[in-house]
Amino acid sequence: MTSFSEIKHAVSTTIDDDRRDVCLQLVDEIEKHSAFKEKLWTYSVFSSWVSAPEDVVQECVNFLASANKARLLHIHFLAFNPSDPEDIGTSIDDSEVAAAYRSGFLYHPHTGLKVKNFEEWLVPYFALDKKIERSVR
Amino acid sequence: MSRENVTLADIRRSATSPRAKLVVDQLLWSIEPPPYHQWADAVEKAIALVGAKMSQKRNHLNGSSEDALTTSLLLILDGLGFEAEMAVVNGNCDVVVKLNNYLWLGEAKIATSASWIWKGYLQLTTRYATGQIDQDRGGMILYCSTEPVPEAMSAWRAALCHELNLADTDLVNWPHSDKSFISKSIVAATGNEISVLHQAIPLYHNPQDALIKLSPGASQAARLAKSAVKNQSSD
Image 1 (cartoon, rainbow over the protein chains, first blue to last red):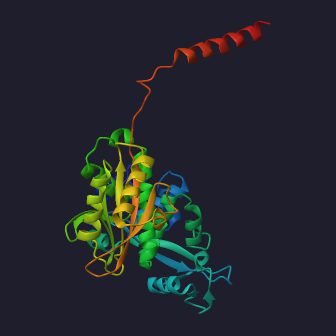
Image 2 (cartoon, chains in turn cyan, brown; image 1 turned 90 degrees about the vertical axis):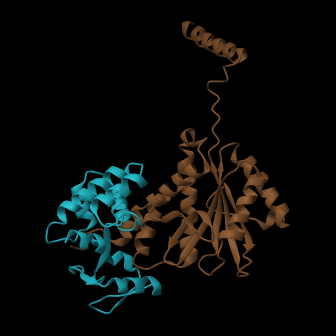
Image 3 (cartoon, rainbow over the protein chains, first blue to last red; image 1 turned 135 degrees about the vertical axis):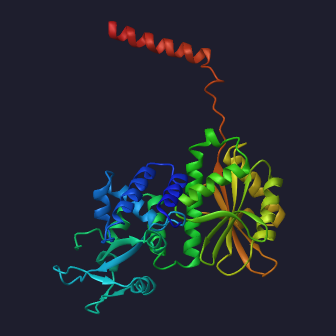
């Protein structure tokens, strides 16, 4: 899938429940916002774009970032330092998160500390999937 | 962004339905692919979910052809984020679910008779199955549209045990659905064992509302009950 219209078609044909309209609204909003320079979004940003329960928005975002035929987004993470409540988060390479899933713990990118319950300290954010990004340019 | 933003752990916690959990799994697999057995478990849970969803529309689906039913099944699997299609794998396989080099192969049949399902079982286990590592699970998807699931599945289970010379206890009940069981088979080409999920999809639809009228005895009982209440309130 390399265009917003193809993604919308895939969403329309594969989802037949309450998520469809929310997914389509999200695709429209993402298309609008993809014209801007800043193209990184969190779940909170997506929630502000559509009026739907938070869990439905989250599920739709997850779908658009994972579905084989409607992949619009790619997930990345900010890592937070568990021992610093003022931490503003550090961008972490996807490969380090992948390694954390293999080993069961994450090395914090700044402190080097081993974080066991790392999902509590990772904030996902999303960018356009590379194929779509190329078609937008 | 701040720590107040939604964390990955929050996302897991808020995904409470089986469907939402599957989608979170798929999302994280885009970062780190799971081991084959974990992915195949997810495919099989998804097929059980799809079955439940199709069953809710059995008034529309009953009477559909095998291909039409399988198209519906594939679309719903797509809607759960899986890469699922009809494709050529040693022949035209009804359900091919893929992730990188992982494969889960399915043969779909309307459960009209044990002999018809047996034909499909042989297609799956002797024609399509590769028997390769990370490709050693699959299933029979049985659309039970002509009779209720217990009848169709117990007949098929007995026939399969007879043909494979198995005791009923050799078949494993699958914990995620009460409408399925698992058998094992050897793929001749590789000598490797494959696991076959036999998943029933309840599509039998035989509404009685237009056929059966309330019996005279029941109507009489209703009248008596009503007059008893009236008499009580007038006393």
